[in-house]
Image 1: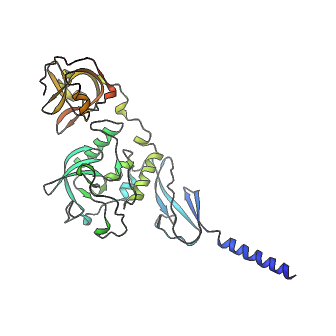
Image 2: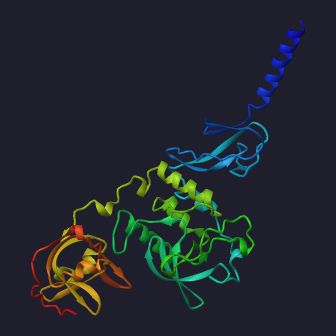
Image 3: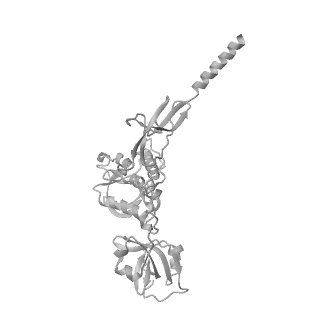
Length: 367
């Protein structure tokens, strides 16, 4: 009898311990269905999933079905809980609901200057591409590389959606009433929860920051529209928004996540240098193929034919220097402009066939 009581007691204790150690369940529900259940062993926080729902934007987790109490990686959990995903149908809604939600209040930058105060109003100087822009602030030049994004190339090399991303960024900035540039906050500036690993200066001495136009976060908007992936977004004050934005763009196959860039669908136009010189506007933002001679004048590179020349923007200095005066066939050059002057870009040695074995007469002066 005593043995039976002991065994019963042991069994009871085991059951109690088992029940107590079963953990705390966090049920993540999306559009009325269970997406995932996570269990933590003791009260605390838990990471949250980012559901990819085709046809919807995901706008965050909430502790209530009215979406008033946010739930995130820092939310404390002490008992079983169901949290709900706020979603928005992709069709017939704003293309950028996350950017719409994240607005910059004027009180955050009024009376401040960039870069001294870490945030301030600036003036557009020149558009470079989808993730780099030149500004001025109180007469000082600001070469700004956008934090946390990396759009496809559109300068010396042209990639799908690169020119489109550059055009979009330039258009909204050119039409903005107010442009504000912001460094990522740092602990030494009174933000103890911000990670110090995010720098303020990048390669080539460029400033690293967030661009706001008329209160909208342009960096985030480029991700949400599918013009860019996230890049190094860890520890940002806006980290969740960037992750959700890329997730939503991927779920809906937006631009770089699945759409074909219409600019790349057509074959290049066959032209001559004379065509480009006479009517460059006819070939603006188009791919062209041609035959010409490599020349250099005043330190710059040109393509020359029958005495006519056209500026070539490229970083392939060594390749061209060894072929100055040689005639070549070049495929898929891209015609764009820089400060009002037309130029050819997208020069690629793989798309180039040298046609002569020595320099030829071309009618253009050479350095």
